[in-house]
Image (cartoon, rainbow, N blue to C red; front, side):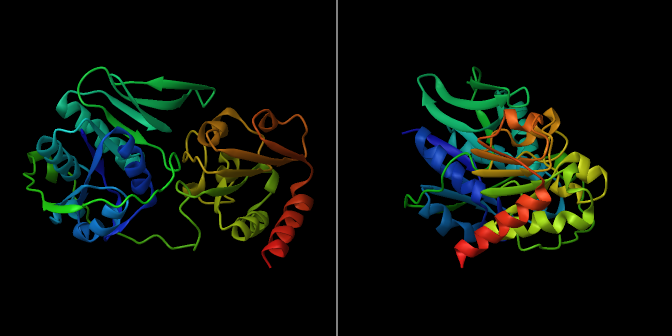
Length: 320
């Protein structure tokens, strides 16, 4: 069976959920071979093996932390040369898409970004994508070289499938470009205790209708009752009501949770582009003609200041 190379996103050995989803998709195409680099790479092996990796390639060189992107591309190319895979899968983060694009250029292959599903085809993997602000769904195949594909978080279930997970040290020769951009300082991001926005199974967002930063506690309370991440529309972010890191939309982050709840968001195309692939969409808006209602699975025409607190209370009551 053909091997499929999976780039591992981890933090000091803790494997992030999108990588485990990639392993589920990789098993549809062949035998997953995982590449983990940086501090703690070897510690990822047990988790990766539990989720289907037949082999884990590791390298813990300091260059991955000291310099940006290119050392990781060098490692992925070294793994590609070692494995000769049928496909290369990378998590669809901002960094992941840059790594994938650089690798595709180096090996002369096509690249597909932001896939939401993968299936095996007679002529190679077939990717499902959303196009034109999610107005259309396309199926795409790379016609030249080895497919390099980035996959959006929450596109596949995390499934245990124990495999050998044989650990092998990967020898990486870093290119001249690898040390072109050096990391001079790092500042840890303050934790909110909530899930990462792009990985969360549930996202609760607020928009212009929240009418001020002082009212975002209503959105946060609903999110916390559901164990959800908090998002915001561009209007709310531009007004200074919520951090830009929480913006959902064309100029913010793209999310694809199981449940997306939009509160006081009109549904402009820029926002829809970042959340339209959500599995179930609920909207609360007092304007019955708001464009968001053309998109939703469930819509509530009402004032969010009345609806959201009642919804939060009901959820907490049922949990209790």
